[in-house]
Length: 177
Image (cartoon, rainbow, N blue to C red; front, side, top):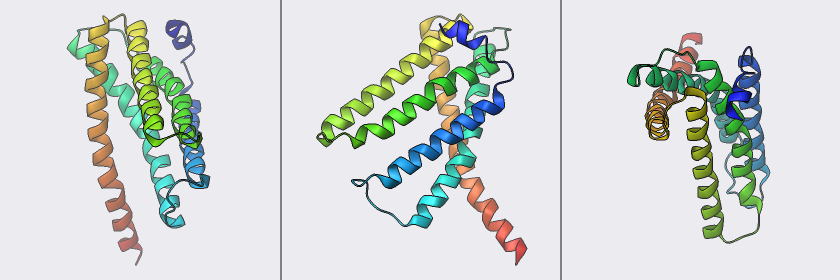
């Protein structure tokens, strides 16, 4: 199934960015209107939503780039599968993000909710491994190594960008004074 879906990945880049942004905005709105969620300053919520809307599309680009790079360099493959990986990762990410955000709205014990959320996230990682294996024709352990390594690199890029964007905003505001 993933191979058939990945064939439709051509020219879907901008649509993928829109879906990621909509998923992040929807998840922030759901968290914001959730009566059981701890209330924060609305300005902080707005800034975190803007921060995530700017940052998450870049992280998907980096994730698919790192995954394609590791797949090609570590396992000596020549096929370029950046677009397919990007497309499939968005198709997996968007519904699971919304599910993960909606689960805490179910009136259950917090430990049960945490177990459900962990199960959903582990299932999402399993789907990623299956998708990578189907698209790249790697073995499952190779797909798992590729996924974990690219997630570590993406997390490192996320931390770097998370530190860089506020400093950039601060320097921009200092220039305007």
